[in-house]
Amino acid sequence: MSSLNTNLNGKVAVVTGAASGIGKQIALTLSAAGAAIAIADLNQDGANAVAEEIKQAGGKAIGVAMDVTNEEAVNQGIDKVAAEFGSVDILISNAGIQIVAPTDQFEFAKWKLMLAIHLDGAFLTTNGSRRCPGIGSSIVPSGSSHRTARLAPPAPSFWRASM
Image 1: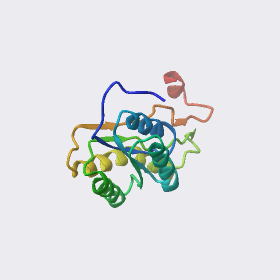
Image 2 (image 1 turned 135 degrees about the horizontal axis):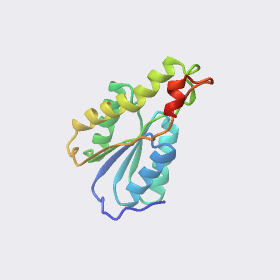
Image 3 (image 1 turned 60 degrees about the horizontal axis):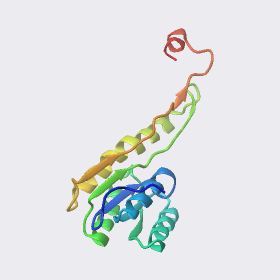
């Protein structure tokens, strides 16, 4: 696990998409630096498991069910964090999905879902968190860069020239 060269004692962090992967590692790192952590994820059982792992290591954490594409769900989750810990000082907007397919097979509904999670999710969690005392210290949108779609052969010449 990575460590931070800072003291986050008394700070509260919400990390979306934290039931696994990069989000989980961010949550564990922030917890090791002293922050209380809200593990926000669609996967409530996974969020609870990570929260329990943090508690077993001596930290403070809760699992929060959160669909970052749903404003009401985001606001309810943030309200739960504020009720439990009193504030939200740090938001790591990390929730995301990866869909890789040739462009001729990439479904528009999946494209819209990906945008909703990555873009709307960052917007909604930022706005939801701003309603809480303390926020403004740190809001970190996170994302991965990868090729979402690839052209199905044969690629038009203007696409081949840019690849």
